Length: 382
Ligand SMILES: Cc1cc2nc3c(=O)[nH]c(=O)nc-3n(C[C@H](O)[C@H](O)[C@H](O)COP(=O)(O)OP(=O)(O)OC[C@H]3O[C@@H](n4cnc5c(N)ncnc54)[C@H](O)[C@@H]3O)c2cc1C
Image (cartoon, rainbow, N blue to C red; front, side):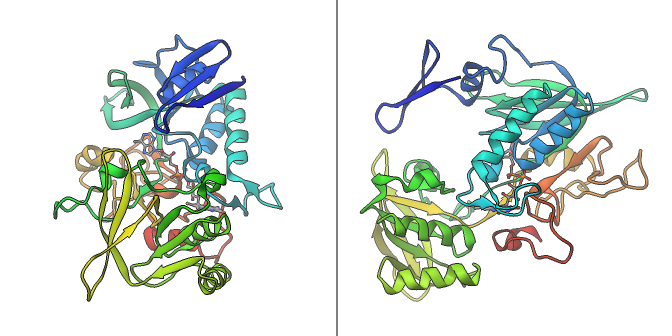
């Protein structure tokens, strides 16, 4: 269905789908407008065979398999469908069936069409907040609590739950209570945790952009913005961890003064006005903090597992669901299957897949035996 986006003041959007105009729709409202789900459909209290938490590559492939087997299937997606693949600036280059690679956005669109054809419900803008297991001698079912912007918290029930909640971006300054640093205040107001191709449009020329990070993702973003005429500063805390070809490109751009490097530097504060980030404070360990004027900052420093919402379940199962770094342990025996099924967790009927798994291969595509996961994953995956 054709739709129009109108940006009002850089903050709000009005969307037109067919004859209907809607100001600032939530992701769920947008999904309903676009007919991803019927406008009157109320999934609260519905019962599904399979509920999947997370609509990234892992969750969406699971939905296709589950719905293809005839299971009534629901995908709860906190944000937009596609996960990290949907916000990746590069092509997915090792996916089965795409010998020349595939643009992440294309892969996401194809997957979405496939789930619709199979009648799976895929709902963006719904965050799972808790899972309870209702165990009776006759049946074991799950109650999955969810919340959507502008809606009352609600639950759905399921026979099987697959957690595919991946990772959330790592914060620049850990939340340890040591003073205000305004990181939350400027998130999405000049501070971003992913860089997509669309960010490097014509408006980027002459802008002052700081990239925090030293891996492949940070490196690709730095190259992309520098090539589009932005003034790029890379703020690197430790060593570079990107591939050699990419590092060579960064070195060349540094020689041409299109990228400035601050290494080893930490970001220690964010500052600006009420609506937008305008400055960051960066610090060399042996020096006083210095200010850097910025138009945008991209913090591309990997992620941590999105599992805080599973803490209660972890406690109920003797802290055996999550590992020390809060990834989900799989291939675990449980009280129903002593010999573990693939992806099985310690909670009977609960499975985990994708980047949220402990020691996951960190890849949208199966990893060839003996091959290292992409370097952007290595630091967070083990
Ligand atoms: C820049 C970049 C380039 C990459 N390039 C490649 C590549 O070329 N080849 C490759 O194989 N891999 C690549 N990867 C890695 C690949 O994108 C990830 O391995 C893959 O996205 C993991 O999929 P996932 O579904 O497990 O998790 P994610 O993609 O992280 O998706 C998880 C989803 O769950 C949602 N979610 C989280 N918590 C909740 C909740 N409580 N309720 C509801 N929803 C929730 C999130 O919003 C998210 O959409 C790249 C990654 C990046 C960042």
